[in-house]
Image (cartoon, rainbow, N blue to C red):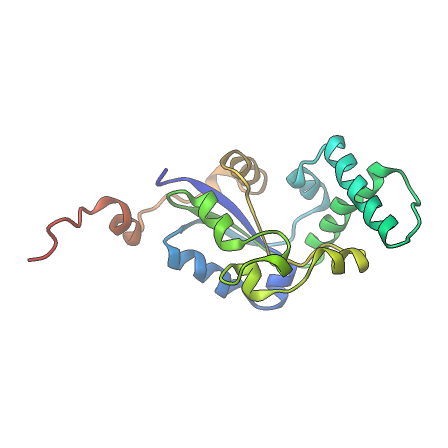
Length: 197
């Protein structure tokens, strides 16, 4: 558990708003260790693999989008599944429009800690104190109106198994660095009982 890893991407809006240091600093302050990091572009094919959605997901999300369109009095112009795929198309277009920062973080309960720090996917409803709640105010409604992906600064893995899959997609094993971090020794290895002289 001490060495659990999770995966994070600082998205184009985080890069363009110069929030890299602020975001990484929050992770470091909580005690997470950086196991790998690189800055660059992702490609479309890899992002389709990254989002890893199936037809059932596309159908369900497509139904939701159709309902939103009907509620707004907008026409239904294509099959349900295509509206679902439009969500990933918009995400892929967005995630490949700018350089992004790929990060592997390590520490006890890293997946859940990072999810808690990042906040929910819709910034408008995120609690203050989370990365998304503190630094952005985009919403699903605004993104849908503008026919684009929601700008929520950061991606993080939802589960340990998902983190393993995403890390393997974006990093080679040689790029993952194993090293000792003194703050981890203090958190996990040093017995602080009787430290008082």
